[in-house]
Length: 385
Ligand code: NAD
Ligand code: MG
Image (tube, rainbow, N blue to C red):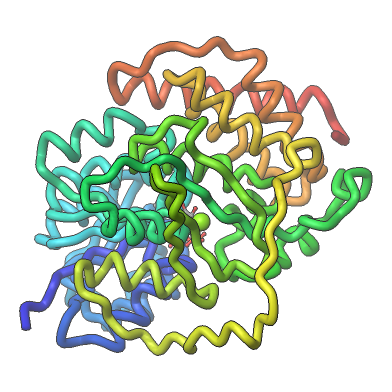
């Protein structure tokens, strides 16, 4: 069997470590040839000791590089991820960096790897057509890792050329799904991080609680599957068993199901088109008893609604939506912003900053900077919000 050389960008994170569990289970199939992280050096050193990659990278240079990890080639600094990837000779890159900070890595991955396994949804939301065009021109495959998009991707393989009428994204509803609006306003970091079904990194868990995550996913689905916003619906499904659905012209709906476990979509992308066992516990539907569904509440989760507006506006609008949120979420996680103010910050940014076209990567980074500056200033000027 051919061993696939995989670069794991964001190896110390929630997605990265679960991908490495799959590598650990299948050393005959995968070799983690490149491991990168931002600043969690001790954790990365341990992974390097275990997986013995050819290259490794840390954006923040550690004070000392232990003797026993020096066998591989190291890269440090802001662009270390990209330089390591270029030197790695990886067949596939799992892009699991969080935020638009991962866009340069996705860009590089499209340049040097056959396939990009994409968890880093912010990069695709912000990168939009430029990223898709680059993939098309270079003949690269983008395989979704986000569970909803993996589900849709899997269902679409049964379309056999038939048109799709609608995509239906399921949403757990996040930690505050059943909270009254007035209590949501001052939800604490601890409460927000207690996600009902998924265990994930901090940023995405906050995004689930505001449902901005589902907004990013609506835009991500538009990018990946070429569907307009009006053909992408969201349904709240607290059990997170149906990972998403595709509706065809005859009304038939195909769904992909499983227990909520990110190793499913990660492993599917890693092994594609083969399905690789990862020790999933079998789906026992009677144990769930009932699968339930409801409409999303746009009044309590205005950021979900706003994603459709950003998609409709096009150009830099999705970049502003994402950039303002990244600032607000970081502030919230640092205990320096009320939960309710995350939505107000993003809404204010979208209402205030003019949008423009995206012609080049510079337009993306300029819009992101504008959103960040606005959000910093707006939060700063509205203390205690
Ligand atoms: P995480 O915070 O757990 O891990 C992020 C990883 O990226 C870490 O290894 C970190 O060192 C690295 N990193 C952070 N900032 C960086 C930077 N500026 N430059 C280079 N590396 C950096 O995040 P996560 O939950 O694993 O999420 C990663 C991505 O996958 C996000 O885009 C998220 O939306 C997406 N995603 C995650 C899940 C999940 O279950 N965790 C599910 C679907 C999609
Ligand atoms: Mg998802």
